[in-house]
Image (cartoon, rainbow, N blue to C red; front, side, top):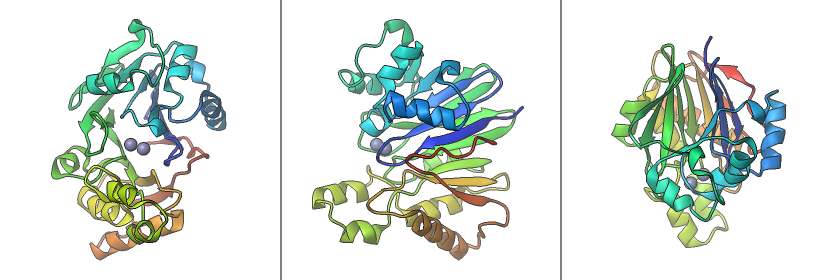
Length: 264
Ligand SMILES: [Zn+2]
Ligand SMILES: [Zn+2]
C-alpha cells in the first residue's frame, strides 16, 4: 500500500499535516488547539489515538500551538532538531524526556516502512526544516515557511509525486495592504514566505515526470486568495511551457477544512 496524507489545516492561523502508511500514523506540526485538531481528525475519519508521533518543522506558534497538549494527552514522541527544541522551551509546557527525540536537519530517519528526510529552509526561526517522505519509490514533499527556494532545496525536492508547496501571498496585495511596513518587509524578505509568483517559478524547476498533484499551502488570509494563488501559479507555469491539468493538478488547502485523505 502507498502513503496517504491530508493537509489538515494550512495558513497563518495554524498548520497541521497528516501522513500515514500501513505502519505509521504521523502528524507534522500541531498549530491549532487540541480541540480543533481533534475536529480535523474526525473530518478525515481518523482518531488521534492512532497517532505514532509528531514531527515539528519550527517553533512559530502557527505550527506548535497544540503541540504540548496533544503530546501529553496521547503520550506521543515529538521529533525536532536541537535548536528547535531549545526554542520551544517555555512555549509548549513540560514534555517528559522519554517523549523527546532529536531529528537533525539534513538527515534521514526511518519510521518502519517510511523514510523521512529533513531539509533546512530559509525562515526566521531557530532552525526551520521541512520534510520529504519516501515510501516504496513514491515521494511526498512538504515545504512552506521559506523566504525562497534555493537550488539546494530544489535538488532535494525535485520530481516528487506530490508537493505541498507554500504560495503565501500576492506581492501587490501585500504591498497595498494594511500591514505595518516592518511586517511587510519581513514577509517579503529571504527569511519570510514564498509569494504566488515565486511559488510558480520554483515549481517550474522541480516539477518532473512523476508529479501528479500540487497543493498550494500556507496562504495568507489577508494578502492572498485561493483563486488568485491558483491563477498566478498557473500563469507562471504556463509561461515556462508547463500546463496545469495535463500531467498534474493544482489543489487548494484551507485553514479549517482538511484536504481529502489521498494516496500518493
Ligand atoms: Zn507558518
Ligand atoms: Zn513560520
